[in-house]
Amino acid sequence: MSEIRYTKDHEYLRIEGAEGVVGISEYAQQQLGDVVFAETPPLGKALKRGDPAAVVESVKAASDVLAPASGEVVAVNAEVESAPGIINEDALGRGWLFRIKLADAKELDGLMDEAAYADYLKTLG
Amino acid sequence: MNEASNQKTPLHALHIELGARVAPFAGYDMPIHYPSGVLAEHLHTRKFAGLFDVSHMGQALIEGDDHNTVAAFLETLCPADLLNLAPGRQRYTQLLNDDGGIVDDLMVTRPPGADGALRLVVNASRKAVDFALIRRRMPSRLRLTPLAEAALIALQGPLAASTLARLAPAEGLETMPFMSARPARIVDFEIFVSRSGYTGEDGFEVSLASTQAENLARILLTEPDVAPIGLGARDSLRLEAGLCLYGHELGETVDPVEAALAWSVQKRRRIDGGFPGARRIQDALANGPGRQRVGVRPDGRAPARDGAKIASPDGAPIGVLTSGGFGPSVGGPIAMGFVARAYSTVGTPISLIVRGKPLSARVVALPFYPHAYYRG
Image (cartoon, rainbow over the protein chains, first blue to last red):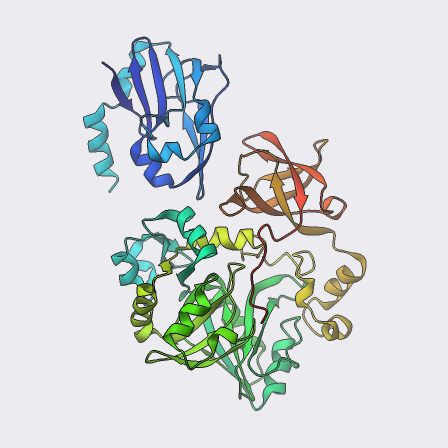
């Protein structure tokens, strides 16, 4: 079973064993509106937590997606580059951006679980 | 920004009811988009008809003894030929500072039957500056009256004319010439309507008493092809249409020739001058401006935004983007910006610095999406 974690900047990290799948949260896609462009990181890139890793742009604005945890990029979602609208349709599923090999399991403690993220969203009004 | 400090338009309650996302714009709480989103609203306007609340814009009347008096005064501030503006016609022009820089861009309308009155529509963010400038320069026999109690509703798109014609069958609004304006009666409302807009589509702008604006908007929105459109789509529509936005393409350091608005300076004014900064503008007309507003198309899918630096293919700085984003009807990224004249020819390869990396692009003709103005 997978577990999902969130950052304050609205990235999600779905933990799948020693790897994590990264995308933007349902809240983030709603805030951005219609996504018209997505850029994923190069395969093999070593990301540090907080590094700008991907870009998601809507009609309204450009948004950097920061790495929620450190690790090497082991897969990217080519489909979001050709059909970025799937991020709006299914941010947590088909709209994933990239997959990393988690470098430091302790970093996960600094992320919010589903309940904590829901509480955090309430504070944003 | 403190929410309480923002003004609200007469349609504010309706926007909230329609589920708009509201954000501050030029001191007003304005609808940025409705639940359907910017993309759908944009495409709806190109295909059907979109209703825009533009009541934040500054409407005003300048009055004097006769048309020549009022037009001659305004010609001391604007480079358009206003003396020869026929009754019932409107013109796009700019208020200029003493260096020929653009204080604001505006529409000037001579109401039919009026001899000694011109209507102005100026940008919301500039109305205080504009009205102060006009009053400072205005002879005492003229009067400037801001129409603070008037709302402004734009209906834009290929079905705008048939929609208005259905509601006012006797008025003949559907055959009004482009850039004409007149009073009319629609349902029970006395309006002042112009055939113009800011989307590149056929359309109308309707000025009426703010107390009646919500009623008219509700009636228009019950028409089958009309949807409410927010400022987000207004911006993407005007960008595709290659139209300037004050604070982006236009500002106090930009003259009309640099802004590729020389078409709005009529021949008599080019020759005779008599407007602020005439020497600079006449020189730019004769010898070409040092920099020029151009259309820009990035080669890939990545949009480039306002503020991105423009470089030559070998990396020399040559300009800056002033607007940029995704063109929903174009289906790709589009932008406008200013480049040194040597790089302003259509087809010139340039590069845009986006997130620190050069993005290849080229200079293209404007508009990005063909205008569909009513031509009779």
